[in-house]
Amino acid sequence: MAVRVNDSKLSEVVELISERGFAGMAEAMQILLNEAMLVERARHLQVQPYERSPVRQDYANGFKPKLLKTQLGELSLNVPQVRDGDFYPSFLEKGIRSERALKLALAEMYVQGVSTRKVNAVLQELCGLEISSTEVSRAAKLLDEELSNWKKRPLNKYHYVFLDARYEKVRQSGCVVDCAILIAYGVNEEGKREILGLSVSLSENEVHWRNFLESLVGRGLNGVKLIVSDAHSGLKAALRAVFPSVPWQRCQFHLQQNAQAYVTKRDRKSEVAGSIRAIFDAENMTEAERILKQTVMKYEKEMPQLVAWMQENISEGLTIFNFPPAHRRRLRTSNIAERVNQEIRRRSRVARIFPNTASCERLAGALVMEISEQWLSGTIYLNVE
Image (tube, rainbow, N blue to C red):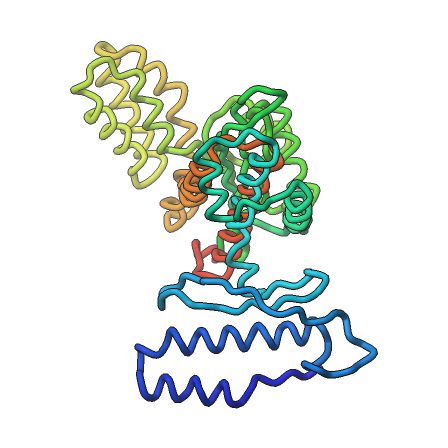
């Protein structure tokens, strides 16, 4: 069905920009977005306003005001409504997915009677006080369906895979426990980053990591040349079971942090960190092994525990020397997860304690879906050719 934008609205936009320049951009954008939402609603209904047609899908039902914060300023929008409620403008839907997940987490706390004064205050601001268990369930179902489809989408060939986990507090059987959010990242054949999937588990035990990795393989993950992660024992065991022939790179950042526990004197910590960094910054494997040998000799009498740890662990951070020099900076750590962890932390500080694992997964899932979409539409992360 062809739907045209109102010509008078377009003329109004042109006049605003012509007369007021950049100062008129916010108002012009407001007009365009309001008009675009009307067009989208007409397409959803499959009829023009006041048109009679046997193919009509629903009926228009007024508007709902919404303030949208943008780089141009705050825009006053009139969001079109339909009678059955099964319509929401697509450009708003994409931008507020994680916001809806956060509201749902707060709303679930409110409905279940476990909210604090702070949660009530935030809930009032975000959702309003009139929130029922039915409304929460309906909204949660829609978001869960979207997350489920994303988690089941087919995967293809990914040159490099990064694995990471972070913990959030969740209520479980009347107690507050730490739940692990397992997240997999990949660099595809175009050299772009993508978040492959996530899973919320009660721990990082081998069985949880193995189930998660097997689900990625089951969705088509293949062609992996290197896996980068920290050295959690459960994850290492799962990698041996699911990806026995794929090289593994231990995150150099975490290695340097772990080494500090074996430095006996505080004033020597920066010196030791510099010595380990020199190993990782070597030009090739031969040079890295030579510097490692020198470092071991340097500290073997003064810090024998550090030396024993280095001999056992540092080699796990040298796998990248078998890969192209141009890729090493990106592959030496699992810092690809840094932004995602920051965004989850920023939202979870508001929710504080999730009422259940589903709520935790809903918020984390909404965030990673949005970030992954941004990465795929953005610039190349690695030149894989």
